[in-house]
Image (cartoon, rainbow over all chains, first blue to last red; front, side, top):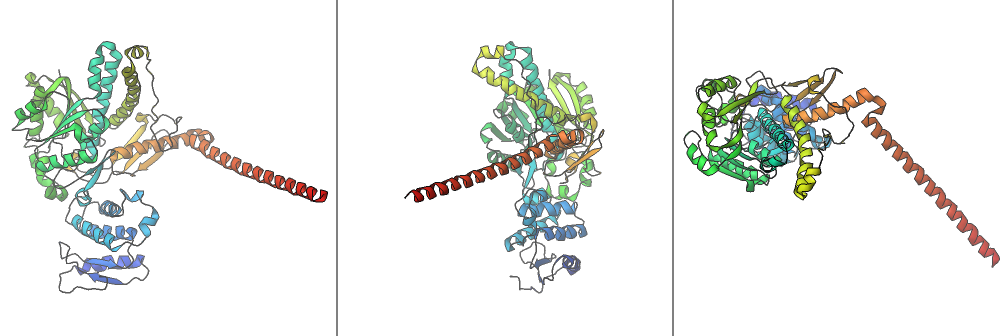
Length: 361
Length: 172
């Protein structure tokens, strides 16, 4: 395999030469064989089959190729993909030995295939088909929405507010003990579960809680189920494929009354969709992002649904666009019949107003 | 303000621990519940070593940076960078963490590392890390000394045996 050279395929030689000369500086007189891969989807790619390629020099090699091709986060992309192939979650988790020993042919093949995908602006999370969310590792598959770091904070917010509530209930005294027993394992409803990041984090923390997770996309519902099984919480989770904009009554019938509604609904303003980076625009489900003209289509549907599924004093936790907290408060003022009180806005780690907490009075 | 969610979460974990103690007592008997006092379990923000006496990290004294790019963030951005830079303003100590693929985990780890660094910074010789190192060294020395003693004792025993066998030979 290493000795063969394929002719007659269109190969981008310029980037090859550049990459090759850089590799030359790092290698010890290894000979080069060029092989244009007949299996790679894009025949313009040149695959270098270097005799003594290691994880470390692969990272550098592919970082340069990503840079030359305008791929965002060239270094992180390269590190994440190659450490994944070598069995680590991050480059830091791998021992130096693992990064400096020669790669097997299978490893090289895997790296080349995965990095070729990244060259198409496929997000890293889709390339390696997994990502971490808080202390969980989730399977991620296109086009299901990839969990964002801000959403980890949404989970922290839910957990800290529920813990505070329990504290209050306990300190009130023995008479509230029945209610507090239920509060100790709250019932959750998540709308727009995607890969299941939020609901599974909550079920992972509250070991006796149950949850209903809803998504419009069948792929999302299926992925949430798979992740639930991987985390062994599937027996406490019910997934529904449902569009809250049109089927809210069906949800009310199936769901019953819950303690908490949590959602990271599509909240982008429609006019902002076209400005998104190619990773998102070309590969993620647009329905998981586009919230309509003012980004509030699904949020409004969630809030209108809330009175029918929330217990008294139940809470709604939302992740939103920074412009939304004010818009939501204004919108609620004209809808007293919903009996929802706007409790608080919380800021994310980048200092943007990102989370809204509402409560059924 | 920006890190208040994480701070509240960690505090609530401490309360949740206290809560779990109460719940356990509840399930055993109602009478026990009435008698239980609120035991506040100290939540050491658990590092690998689990030191109990680390200095408390005050969130207001921290400046946390997380680079999310110039974009709007949230759903509009998809980046894998999750490096957290934590600066403790009074001491000037800076901790950078990108050990995991989760920002939340990196923030927690950064705080643990900061705690340990603050411990060394403020207590110097008396810090937990130094104490542990000293204890390890002491244990090592003790082990050597004991091994030496054992060896000495064996040698003496051997000598005695030789002497007694000489004596029995002479007697014959």
